[in-house]
Image 1 (cartoon, one colour):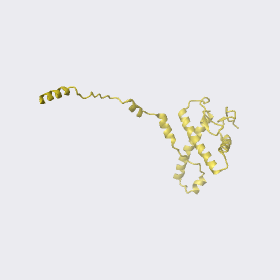
Image 2 (cartoon, rainbow, N blue to C red):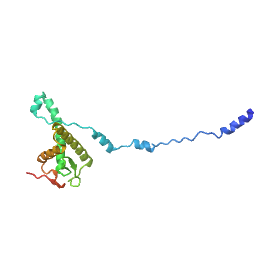
Image 3 (tube, helix red, strand yellow):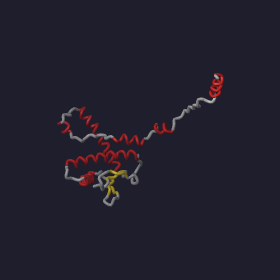
Image 4 (cartoon, helix red, strand yellow):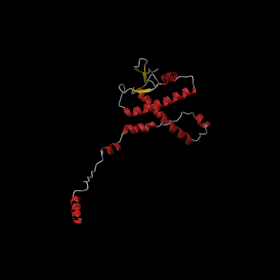
Length: 184
């Protein structure tokens, strides 16, 4: 009986075998997708945080606050120059008609009218930052003046921006068309 059991066990042992294992030197599709670079999404994440800019201060205000050393003035000037550069860049885009001041008080991209080559992603980033700053200002003004509606704040903003707009800057008319601000 033991002999028969031994033969049966020996016969079945040949039927059981380990599966073939194949090693591939390549990532699976899921691994490739997970490791992919997504510059658009990465840019959106980078822009999600607010980048605070310096507030323009007069030298009298700086002296009054105790910032009267040359090193402090240099530090403030360096911060302020970054803010001015952003405003100057927006003015250049307005004059080149790559962006325009819209009727609702925001800035909008106008690539069809743009003169010269531009990086549309960079323009979009700057527009998003400028419009986010404007919305924060409007919200603050509206909170300070509880009786004022957002539409009134935006209308006052637009009126002031029309006066301050750089000569030749792109401006949206009431009929939703675009024109350059006339130079005095």
